[in-house]
Image 1 (tube, rainbow, N blue to C red):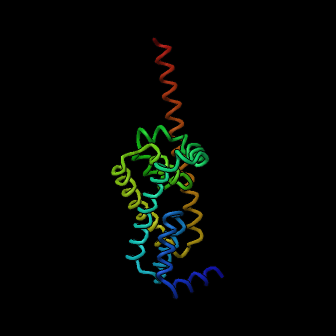
Image 2: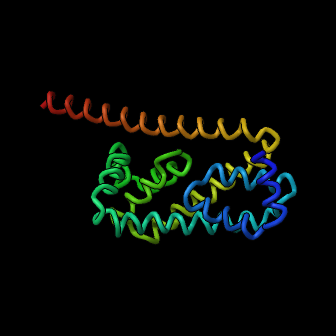
Image 3: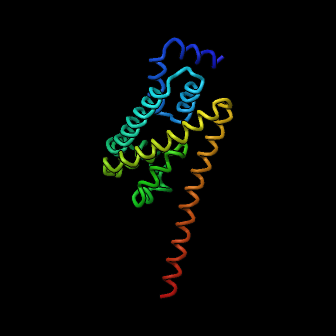
Length: 195
């Protein structure tokens, strides 16, 4: 039923579909890109307009999340509290290695927008920020778009694989920082006991 509704929408109102893809890239990401690329693979949408729409939506969305962080986090206490809770495991790493954290968060479900808002809250240099998110977006579009195109026949399976892969990446990144923190603390204690 939903498939027929989607196909009917694509067939009758392509400008609306592109507008939905654009808005979807600002707020969601994976599912929207996979769906758009699936529609390209089925010959229902053209690749170039989809890629342009996706890229513009991502850049506007990333800019919006940065400015939400830089202008609204200090004013809205509950939003500030939520973002600080979500990013607390990686906050010091955002300061030390912003390119790595922002880039890898693009591939981690559930934390990317919070990290972008945290970067804005920390007043990260906007040109540097845009360079990092641009590289991340291009990489993400290539990886996710390729997955969507090559696995368009098994679209439902791919959605679940990507979601689990993103969660595994998030857990891996958090485990890396936890182990690094533990090793650093251990070495500091060893150094203090040696003196």
